[in-house]
Length: 81
Image (cartoon, rainbow, N blue to C red; front, side, top):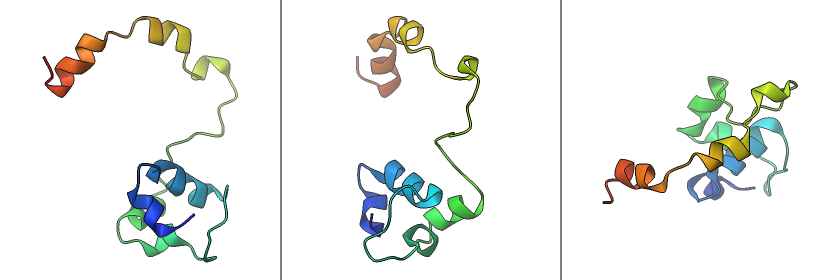
């Protein structure tokens, strides 16, 4: 992982991989702590992926949630009519 990936489409993976130690960095540095914006999130303890979910009731029921998804609501939220 590299600092450039923090500003790509894969920024979330890059951030979480560094914070949680999932993947090594190419240069061996802590690129999240060295970045002026993402270091604020890291220092505040911000994490997006919860690895401590033990109870299945805390997880998303994808079949239920997806079956009720209405694309027109999403389009309206984006301002696409």
